Length: 190
Ligand SMILES: Cc1cc2nc3c(=O)[nH]c(=O)nc-3n(C[C@H](O)[C@H](O)[C@H](O)COP(=O)(O)O)c2cc1C
Image (cartoon, rainbow, N blue to C red; front, side):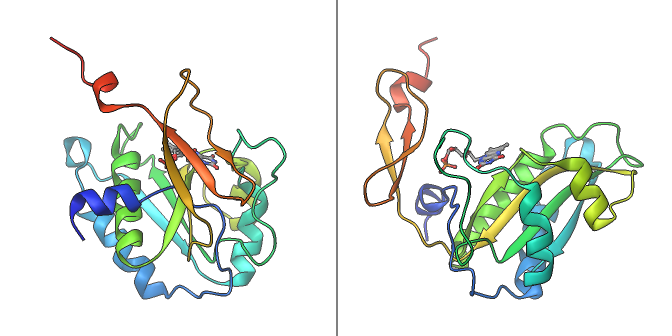
């Protein structure tokens, strides 16, 4: 797959075939892509928790907030929930802040997931204290981002943005539409 195809296909999926099992080895391979990504001052302060069992997925799901723009949708129903999660932690014993590292690492992981026929969603809206308690995450780690992963079970369409409205939406067939700004709007004339 070309880089362009990979990037275009790497969308935020929120509905999955929950019965699709993702091996721990696959998750480790994705974290290896994050490991090889750029890191400010090469500090590499990020750590990763990997979960791929129904028991842990059930524990994590209530701490994740889905698709704030979809006011009448409360997240994936049983059967269409993620079958794995990667939780990105910031190790405060290594750095006080984590700069742009989490976004770079997350995108590397999501691109790898696409290549592997998976998909997912980066989640920053997290009930952090509840999650910390449920998973017994030590205070030394900031909970930075969750990557919800699975085999995608929804169609995502890219629309050209209209009236500056950035809100994604679902059509009658439950296809998910994401408005993107045009290239000539992004590139400023110097
Ligand atoms: C840093 C970051 C945090 C995000 N947090 C959430 C979140 O908490 N819940 C959610 O459903 N989507 C979340 N998203 C996904 C965005 O809503 C999504 O990227 C956006 O709608 C554009 O869709 P696309 O990724 O398919 O281009 C997040 C994305 C990023 C980059």
